Length: 182
Image (cartoon, rainbow, N blue to C red; front, side, top):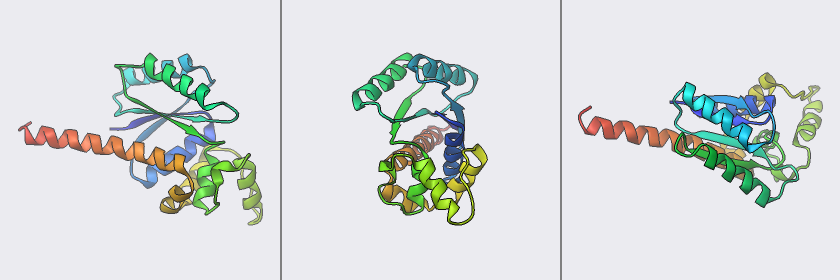
């Protein structure tokens, strides 16, 4: 069963899809199109009615928001979908491009103010450019060393843990059904 992942931008979708593919997890990505918690909750409710998901994961860039502001947004989303689907929320420092940088051994990747610009500068050294797109972000995510990346990116580690936790819960449920004779 897939996880529903709500992201901010098109390149975020590519990074999430690439990482999910690397760890062999099925995800469906949707863009949140705005920062209002009620809109995000509406997308989650609509998708949960359309298809059954193990859980929903919301990735929200921190930018210049306070921790209290993000906690309020996350709590509003959870309250609005309570009883429909379990929701895990991850505050992504700066942008998910920091996850790609972490996979390229950039220490403190999540502290870089503009990770997408930093990634572009790195790629220019190889005669390439980073232009935000779903396909390029996915390709770059597929190329990173996840074990190395999670050492440098706590939010990437949290995301992967949430994906694996959903998978483990699904396996435990399958085992329980098998043990009960179904």
